[in-house]
Image (tube, rainbow, N blue to C red; front, side, top):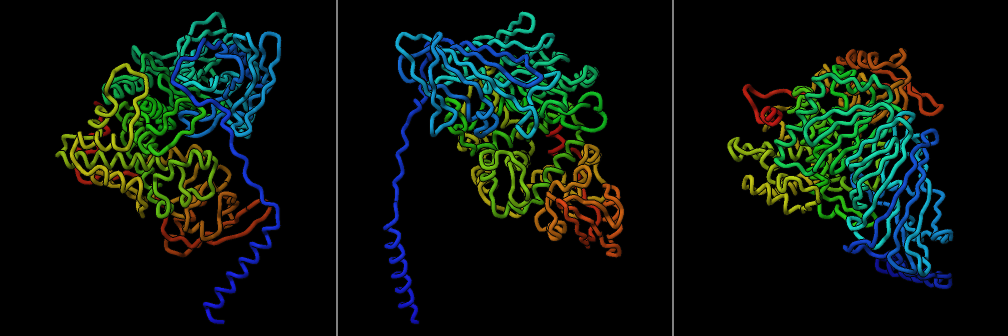
Length: 636
């Protein structure tokens, strides 16, 4: 058939099919009714009184009573926080709110959940009513498969967004609230929000609802406070009292962290700052920034196994940096007037990426982590990102959507899918910016100058000063003239084959691969992860469970994925040492690596003829003398 006639026949067939469907029922969509008042920048009339009973640590139940002044008669809407700062996504745990009852005096007011926004509850306020009382429970997770465990036998983490509702129609900074919490007897509580207490009942300073949400609490049986400066405290909670024993040198390193941060930024954007640190394997881990505090969770051994390696000592430098970057200076599209308005994450490569950069710099400057360990940690980051082929199809900017897209759930093929790469690749971009500033200025300018210019204004201001892409470019140009817009656009918005590693080589170091692990990687392996990522193309956890597979690697080509368990190597039961020996033995191609694999209840054997030997990244100095990276990591 001629092509023209064939196309005409196809059109006739399509038209007939559409005509045939026209006899079917074909609905039209219902319009969406705007049922929730938009936030207004006006004062809420009255002060909310919030009472929380946090004594039920056995069942992890928080019991809440909230007295809310009424603005007017008629329809009223209460909201549970949905879009949570620091989470960069809608993470409010609405599923754990239960038993909600709303009363006006002795009268129960029926409520109805909004059909479009499940975080909203509507009810009608009768004439003459001046306040309503909302009571409910928050059923905190008792197992990790329900979410993060925030209540343990000897400590708890109270996050106000889980135990409060707020009236719709107002900027949250304009809603006054005063909270009281009863904790288990004998426990101590710490928060960035000042309080007084009578026994185990704490009355918190009246504040805005916005500030309350930004002031979480750690409370526990085993507690110790360390003064780090006139304005900064380290509040440590632990499962066991023995974990609180810190040496003077360890606390001195934390004091230097505060000193170096203040010297770097040139201002403090808090009146007082509280590190909340939990040393626990019973409560879930956390690292979450706030303006005048941070929530930090580490495993036991933070102090007692200090010499075993850096562990999670990068956590506190990172979270404190957020007081300047993320809390005070914040992407304009990320700031919202309430916790219902969606956040937009386009500037997380500054918010998180530069915080990641300064976190590693400050850990070295303070001595919390040695310079060499810091260099090798940076090399490991660079190597990891340089071995993610997903960068060829997905630009860095798109990974800023990951908190919303993937909800931080595990991914099967991270090297191809990419994840929240704006953290570590953002670090690499700012490391390269440091090298470029030094190069252009003949060594007179660096990222320190950017930090002081961008974050160092208005000492003591702990409001929010927003910025956009143009503001970042303008500040860089003010430090050192250059086409910074093109520099950042290429690295943030465009795809590439290689990670931005120029910050190493132009600053005096390079990433090399050797058969021997750096001390940092050895310490990481002692925590349970065996790294064959740069050789076989996979990492393994305890008992041989595969935890990641590099796309297009030998492991990938043998159909290995993260649901695989390595049972044996060349007939011997798997251990990291046995697999390392097999990889080394096959360097000449004389001893192909035979793996017995288990997937669910099925077994199979594969042969990996990889001949490249063991490969581990580390930092290697180029030349001699002090380089830019040496100066960047040196204490001020």
